Length: 373
Image (cartoon, one colour):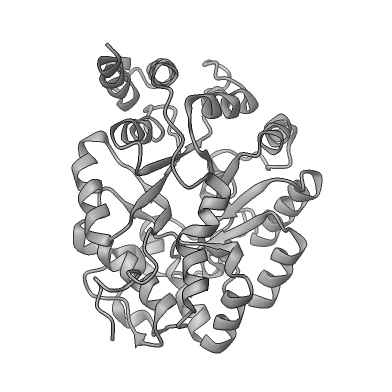
């Protein structure tokens, strides 16, 4: 059996498309995770909290600090809508153009996760999003989009403990899984050239036939592999069928882990390791005890590996991401990033009363400006 240090080594140059950066004070922790996991580059998916000015700013900071290692996927800022119009934010299309001009590598969307829908009940088919969809289609912007959640989140008897602790269980008052899929279908019908990576395997791992139909119908979309631990358990029920799916669609699947800079080295290695082991070996194993609680306890289930070919692994680990976002991160336009972070800090101050300069975006603006001086 391969060791953790050997998994992924036969293809090299691994890019993790799905990583979360916390406060800038966790910079050293994330760099240590990079080294410990053997991941060469990371895509920082940057969900914005407009009231605290966190999410995007710290990812821009990491791009500035390590331009060769970090891609940035910028989340949308809905401060105007969330404040009832008391705060002005740029339109979503204007934001997308700003992200591109700053040197961001793509967009991250959380609008499609049911908890996001609870906070902001606007379907992605609403006119609110119309100009944005047209803009990112025209720009060819790669999008990493979280749509839906595991099916058991709508079943109180099957809801995992770790999900219950985060209030990720849904009831009859919440949007349904099929409604969210229907809305995506409508968006893709209107904008068939959108370049989207659906996070967490689009939560279709329990129905590979449906997943295959979706990929066949939409040739510009892909799935990422950030666990959703249910994805590994679902495919482990029939590893041969899973292997055939992953071989057939090896050019439509992108490696991801959902690592965050707030995790310990052991937790990050466990996250990366289970995905590597699942892809590369025929091992039968469980989630290691040192894994973070979002992967659940080891006794939750058995994972069976698929032993994919080197060609399939090379595509999944780096080739597919490079085709979408480039071999290397785009250079950051520092002046534009400073101005944008200052805008984010002012929005947060207006929404929450926090001093702009003390927000994460305010701190990043000051640090980036000092590098230009």
